Length: 318
Image 1 (cartoon, rainbow, N blue to C red):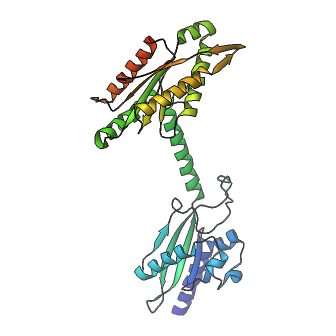
Image 2: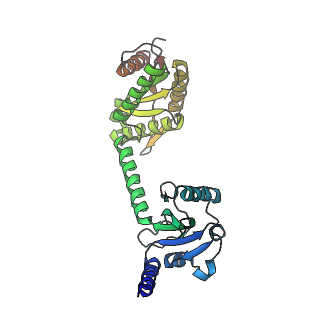
Image 3: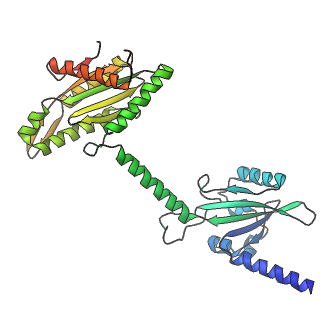
C-alpha cells in the first residue's frame, strides 16, 4: 500500500513538473542535464532524450561559465538557494520571445532560482534550475520607466526651444553653487539676449520671432559641452551654466557664440532676418552670498554690453 502511495506521489510530482509554466532543469555536479521539463522542451526545441547527460554549457554557450559555476558553488557550500533577476541579467538561457503582447522583444526576460537538492545521504549531489518567464513584467516596467523619464524631461524642458526651462537650470545653478561652497570648485554663467528683438517681432511678426528664438537655441546646443546647462531665461533671454570654467574660459565661449549668431541668417516666408546677441559673463571668483547673486552679476555684465552698443561680450568685474 505504501509503495503504491509513494509511486502515486512520484507520478503526481512528475506531472506537476512537466505541466508547470516554468522551466525546470536538474543538473548533476558535473553540470550535466538529468531532468528537462516540457517548458524547456518547448522553448528550446530539444527533446529530453537529446539533452540527457549533456553539459549545460554545450547546450547554452551564452551562459557565462565561470560566473555560473561560482554561483552554483555558493549554493552547494551554503546549502541555500541563489537567485538571478532580469534587471541584473536579462536572461540565463537565450530563448526566443513568443508572447504576442510583448512580441517586440526578441528574447525572453528571465528570473532564475538555483536550488540545492539533497540526496538521502544529505549530500548535495544535484542542482535544480527554475527559469521564470518574466517578459511581460520586464516590458511593462521598461515602458513605465521610459514614460516617467519622458515626463521628467518634459517637466524641465522649455517647449519652444527644447532647452532647459528656468526652474531646472536654476536648480542646476543652485547645486553648482553648493558644490563651489563645499569644494571651492569654479563655475561661470553666461547670460545673453537677442538684440532689438521687439523690432524683429514688429517687422516680421511673432511667428518669425519664435523661429529666431529656435534658431538661437539650435546654435547653443551645437556649442555647449555635455556637462553644460543651457536654458531659456524667458522671452528672448538665455543662459548657459559652465561648470568648472572660469571667466576667461566663459568669455571665449561667449565670443564664439556671438560670432556664430552674427553669421546666422534666419529665413521666414521669403524674408531673411539678420540679428545679433549681447552677452554678459560672471563667475564664482567674485564672492557671492547665494546663487541668485551670480545671476545678478551676469545680468549686470549683459547690461554693460547693451549700453556699449550691443553685439558684444562683457564680463562682470572685468
